[in-house]
Length: 127
Image (cartoon, rainbow, N blue to C red; front, side):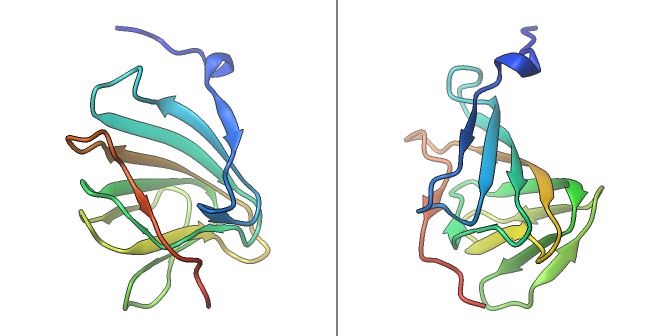
């Protein structure tokens, strides 16, 4: 077992080509911690969200606080609240973020493919 103190976790501002609005990413498990699994606590300011994206091996998000809006391509926007989880299947195009007027924090868990890739970022969301 290896413990990772929270104070040692790398936190960085989410880049504008991945997110719309203010987002902070705290890595929980990265490439140096696990050969395949990646996870992060992601904090979204009210109304902030990801761009459309896919995960080659899928992604699970678990809502820790706030109100999350998530959408699979071609489907309606869904509302998630603390304690809810969503699974996005491998290759499923989607976005997720904080509802307008409500900041949101979620735990994101995904697995790297054989090339070490966990996500392919796409275009901005237009609602």
